[in-house]
Length: 457
Image 1 (cartoon, rainbow, N blue to C red):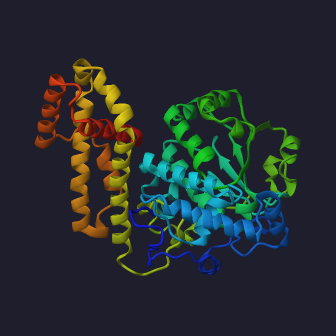
Image 2: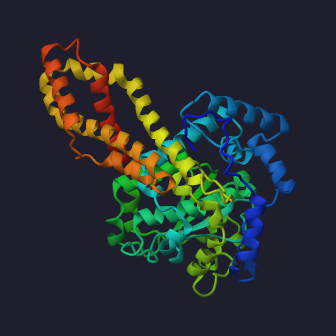
Image 3: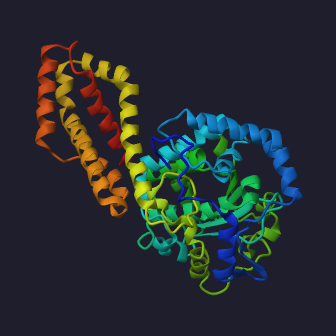
């Protein structure tokens, strides 16, 4: 969660209680069977095998764990604009993928928060109840048996089963995030990681038209830079020549580390079984698992729906996962106030950081260049006016005022206000009179507001 408060100010209405979630799931979740194997969320403590694996692969010893917690808390305390819950389970989610190196975990947290600011539309209505279409379509689901290395296996059906007119790319991505959230609640998955099987059987040209470069960049950024999990491999099966066209859209954004973990199998199930044991594979992928009978997409959605408390309020807060079990009605108001404050502080920090580098270079180019950017500066002024107005509305309306409205207001580029125009023209006249005495802070605010707007498009 974000706020100007220090990390010690732990919100009293938010707690993490995995055992309570697990008991709630056991009591209410319908059974989802893959043959004789039941799909379940494994929130219980890890056994000796995973303890030794964590020690070997992640350097997870009591001394290193204690040092990781201590250093990460210190790093977060030194970032006044970044507020997270002071909860061990939250820290573990980011420390384990980074092998308990606090600096790496700190960078991962900041990248994750930045992703949520850059793509606010993905986190709008990010609730299981709101993403019924994507989950019921059976496009993303975990398998009940873990791989021989202990990793959780996820199936992504991105071929003939995907109907883009019914499930948009954004909804598809939201469904993937929700499934990953549940996977990352599991201690075993945090330790052993995740393997994704991407089945693109039946992928057509009509599918490819929906895979824009902006969507490709967004999903690749999340997977390789912002996702707090150990991605052990992406296994692509049933691909055709059309998939090569789709992959060409994603390839420029892939880093070498992720490229080395992408494996193309086609229909060579023996090569797939070199990475995933046949006991953990579906029969259609050369394994032994029977597919869930009936409307398994609907059944999986109902199964996840019992875990809805894990996602309550997730669209309003800037953290990875949070489990809310409090009935305190003031929680939304507190969350929203912190959200508003963070966005304002984040924009201001951008201004201070770039005022020397961007603004002086801009001013030195002269009045002609200023005219070219005049409309962008006008938009920037309007955005800042809107931020101030939204802040006042937030205080008046409290929790009932949608948190996403603040982000959307930054994207409104064509709001015109008399005060903004007056300041724009005043600064323009000062610039034409003297390049050296120009109001640097004003120009920096306008330019950086425009940068912020462009990044949220």
